Image (tube, rainbow over the protein chains, first blue to last red):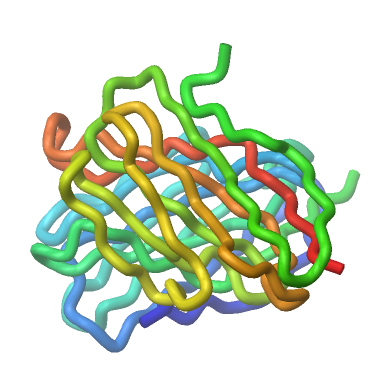
Length: 110
Length: 115
């Protein structure tokens, strides 16, 4: 079952912040975040494991609330290079495969 | 050369034709996956394989079949293509359990159009 992502799209000016949310109705072992630039393949950003700490990649960080089965991706002081579609991927224990959300398209403007 | 190579990159075909999309990897990973991407629907898992003898259906396997010819090769077939199979298809690999997390490396994608 695919996780639910919100919002579907967000438009930012350089330097602004944004939050992307991902939620699942199932108990999760891990949450992954990937970014896809237009016309390219998705690229891994970070993974949050059950019981793990908050992670970061450049000025992009994420958290995982195990009790609520929710993860949030934080884009801080956004740069033009942050534009793209962000996908969360969720994995349940002993499942060994990722289910992806529908994606959030982020547009950062100068 | 890319770690995960997909061929063809683009294909236009007609309804009822048989189509094969191929994926090869040089990463030495055991796990391989086929995903389909449609606008607004994200990535949906079609089939996955944990080794040559292990093939599993994903969320949307109807109308598709796969073959794992070797550790490095994983092919996706559409036996009789239909227009709603028009999509962008991605192959991915993962090196779990070597690093303890199922991180995916994607190929560049194969865009399929069924007329």
